[in-house]
Amino acid sequence: MAEGPARKGRTAVRLEVLRKEHLTPHMIRIAAGGEGLRDFRPNEFTDAYVKVIFKVPGVEYPEPFDLNRIREELPREHAPRMRTYTVRSYDEAAGELVLDFVVHGDEGLAGPWAQRAQPGDELLLVGPGGAYAPRADAGWHLLVGDESALPAIAAALEALPAGALAHVFLLVADKSEHQPLATKADAQVTWLHRSASDDLVAAVKALPWPGEDVHAFVHGEAGFVRELRRYLFDERGVARESVSLSGYWREGKNDEAWREEKAAERKAASSA
Image (cartoon, rainbow, N blue to C red; front, side):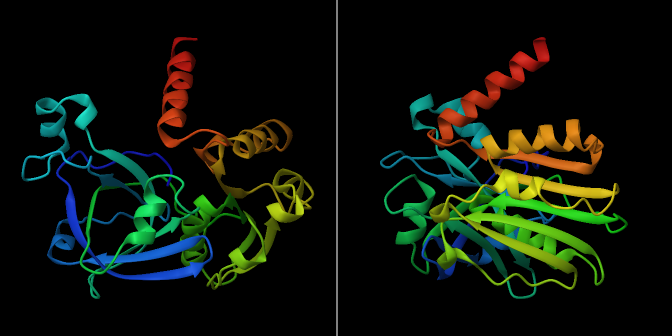
């Protein structure tokens, strides 16, 4: 779900829900497809992401559903809301695109939608974008994240070749949130639990460093991403081009507030 370049086209891909699966108490998998899937263009990234579109109830939108046209013709308060989700998998032959949604009851926008979703429901999205895929010739791989980054990390593990060394650190609520992770790589997976007050940053720092040629992926809550950014760059001296970093969300902020904060930080950095 790294915020790399998305497709320029702003006409939404219109899919329909094919099935829903509860992977864990707080993770729902939605498989979508239908005729609209022929308009989807996959990319080479394991963190390929799409913007899932949620219409404002009661608003009539122009057809085809074009975001540029909507922005030009409708008032701002009628603009659909969007949430970013990693493409967990795409199977052209089967006609399926899979997204995994973290859910916390009625909290948020996308999670409650996923809980209510039924086969035949509409799923609108634009994308994909993306920025990361594990480098085949890296000496080893470091993959760090929470539930929000788990789909991208799982996709990266599936893409790693046999014999590749990977150290994986995943922070979830408790043991009930563990998922099977398929890989051909020599992957050492460490699950950490909020229920036990496990410290993700401390666990990564405690890892005996396997070597300098690391390709790292650190995504999830902005607080630990920032701490590990300092650790990797300042303490370990990892080259910036060898690290993919992204704060998907921030504790205590909804998606709109977090996006505004990120935009303000980018603006301040560019003017410094």
